[in-house]
Length: 106
Ligand SMILES: [Zn+2]
Image (cartoon, rainbow, N blue to C red):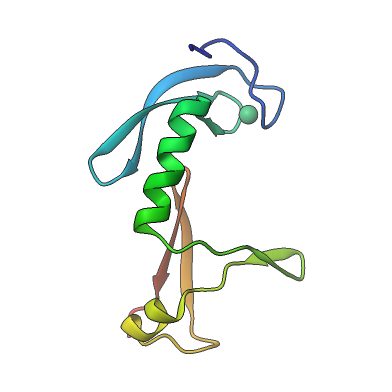
């Protein structure tokens, strides 16, 4: 199914344009980007595949409320591997529709 030109289901304002989204290193899938804020949508078929890929390569967490922000618990395995400590500074940025968290340089 082609969603090009359809209205974005996230903001209900922008129009969708087809593009190739890199969902993992070197893995590109058909996706649609909204021209009003860059919201990303997949067809149901692709969405199932992307979720399966994430489940195999990532740890699932639920966001928790932190004041007016939300916080994602970082899995203990990653905390240990990167030797992260509570209150340590990290830098959070967006790369496309991904969230990147970098520990401050030691
Ligand atoms: Zn949108």
